[in-house]
Length: 234
Image (cartoon, rainbow, N blue to C red; front, side):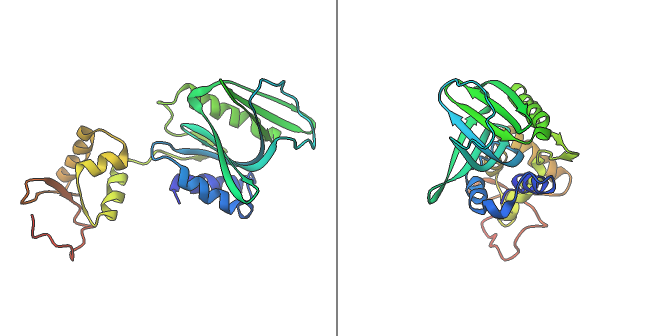
């Protein structure tokens, strides 16, 4: 399971926002659908209602009409809600870039955060003490998508994984031998940036640049390199 997702799940458990054993199947489904280009920022269990029309925002205690219990995940790109539907788990979403309004309303019984896009409405049933931090996070991610690298909630911080760590993780998968193109796909950066980071690791002595007999350039990480891997073609 992805590290950012695990991190946020553990934080949600500490803050009693989720009971994981109730949502094991949904957690696994979400993990499979997360994109490499997004980072998980927040996880919580909640009831969520979804509407196609602009209904007024009302809080009706114990009214579960159109409310689906499940897990809410906020990433740097979208809001995901995974829930149980008959004999399978399903996912619904709203892209952050499509959100045109965020509002909240509360009373003695609880609170609702309404997230509205051009075509859909999500009503998130939420504990009153979580409204401010969730609303703030949604506004920050929607309004500053390129500037958000880390976000603190309840003294918790998740930082974006460095390019060097991505390179080492990828090298471990490829037995210590990798190309700039593989780094491009793993880190979602340009080919020039990939070469820049790889060459920096070479200059620091953490990597070596090799040339195959075919003429293609590859980088090797000596600390990870599988010595049983045939290198006769270098």
